[in-house]
Length: 165
Length: 295
Image 1 (cartoon, each protein chain N blue to C red):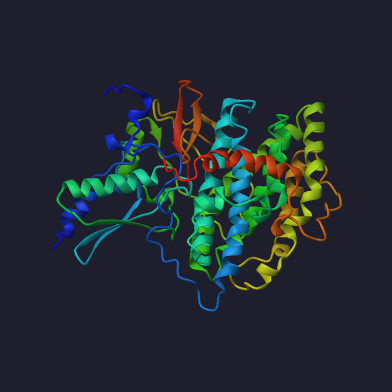
Image 2 (image 1 turned 135 degrees about the vertical axis):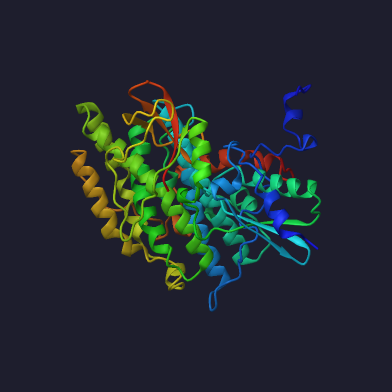
């Protein structure tokens, strides 16, 4: 007999391999923990399709649950609905900011053709160190697929920003 | 933690599966319901997924070849990131293809153990720009590729195959960034110096003969109504975006006739350019040298 509430709370402690200050639950990657014939079934969704951390997440979930006494664990992937940065919890955003990574704003929504962005994005991203609103994008891409690289024009520090998708 | 040699640190004995390279990954569709939609021929669906998967795989490899060659560190990282996104899309699509054909092949065997005539990517994806370090060339290639693919994936989100629709919905979010990146560089180079303008215009002119192929229909697509996207439907959106970008970049949208295939056969039929053989010999070399290995 699987005690689902406990299994859920154990799974919720597993952290993201690339953003270790966040749990998979904070990140919105952990979608569901359920039970099927005595097996704990954990459902996760990738942030980006090429995310190389997915295999590590699966392994970490299995090992953490096994260490907590759940021998039969299955990790399933769901692709739909696609992950959105809106799924990062308020707690997750707070932890990101605390670690010097600027959390995402609201994700764009589109009906119809997706508009082309020829200039820098217009929304304000505050510097996670000094709080200034005068920051600029250096690159839409960074050390991981989910982040962009920015610089504060006031304190001159570079920082990472979790992209809105 | 100290280790006698570097490999020990990443070996399974240490129970830290931190390193995601090599083969032997878990199935990227594990736990996804991959049964076929009613009335769909598995071989046709597999052939279609191979086309879209090969486009992503080959374009990804071309972007990876830019590692250490980009003009700025930020662009090095950008091209690698875009390549990684496309590799992720390729893994899902090749896995979908393998499951639909039911032959026991996998994403790894499809990527590494098919020969040139079995690849179904459009020829645009295989064109080489890294060997001459032609940055305008890779930007032009990426602009055309991502504009076309974004229009395609967005329509594919309505596919009757729920797996294909889900893969497309994730891809739309990623390719939106890819297109913006290429469009912004096209404007910067086109509207830059006289020399950068001329290089950007030549890059577009050079690849334009491979644009027509992107919008040609195929018998596999025709056999998959409601599942596949008819390529000719993408042309209007593609032309709109290219006109918008070229106008901001003070460039001219080229007008060149499509490069003919061989007896009408092109990339989608496994007929490729000279560049393809060299690409595959590099991309597949490690897997073919150690065909039984997983690491």
